[in-house]
Image (cartoon, rainbow, N blue to C red):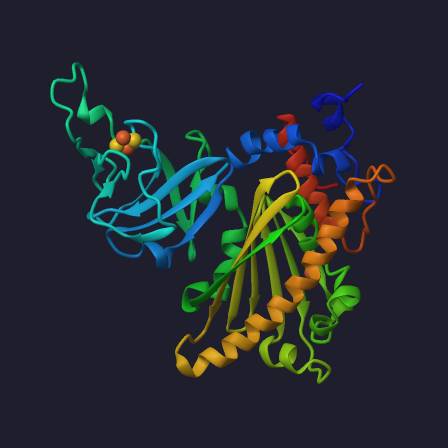
Length: 373
Ligand code: FES
Ligand SMILES: [Fe+2]
């Protein structure tokens, strides 16, 4: 008989200490019902990165996105206030804004031409005279919560959610000294992977465990033995001292400074930092066995002189990403195998994954996350 969702959730023991813990079980990575539960209880309730602040700097600038299956538009008003709405026309539900990003004077629905102000208020309906008991003021776009942190814009579909600052907790203080605001956006790259979104997060959170085996170039500049992993609130900070090495010219030229920091914020946002370099990874589920990873690259300089160096740096990241894509897709095939249910975690390396799995279990089971044992 098919297992119920409750039975699948119960396989994972979120009370186990790291040394006793298993990973979340394989069905969490391929069962459609778990993906649906995540949509509602994780992506529909947590703060979700949707845009960069530079995309929404001036009045009229907008970005569209889809979070937890919901079409969303974020727009800066003429009063300079940043607002987010469900991108759903109040007439017959078409998407009002259809471009991924841009600048507009009004939000005009392409279907029958209804027009909304940048503040979401319904301004005009074509050929709507004689309609009874229709209140224009009651038919603006439906608002969503939006807040910003550093260079990033987040929304939350849950009107009762805590503030973004409280959700991020200690991460705000940890990231502040890095002065991300001084770095400028340079390029976006997106990768579609044939794996569950959590496989990608797990791979990020294995404390560098896979780096010497899979990423020889990157490994040549990291002091692997001194790699640290710290869990706090809903985030994990992985840090590694950098070392001089001639083994990989591109990696050593573009991974500079004394330290590398890799931040993960539950559930699906990562910030990777080297001196003069930042990239963010946003991991979006597309289906239970597919995800999209969006990389935004920022650098200290973005003019013509800096561009060649920036491209060399992105090429290093792209190589690492290709190596990760192959392994993540292999993991997904393995998770689907009858040979595998769950695995164990390295105490030295995999505390970040343990935090992720416990936070996720708490959200899916509707319980509070237990403190890190
Ligand atoms: S659905 Fe938008 S105007 Fe009709
Ligand atoms: Fe990797």
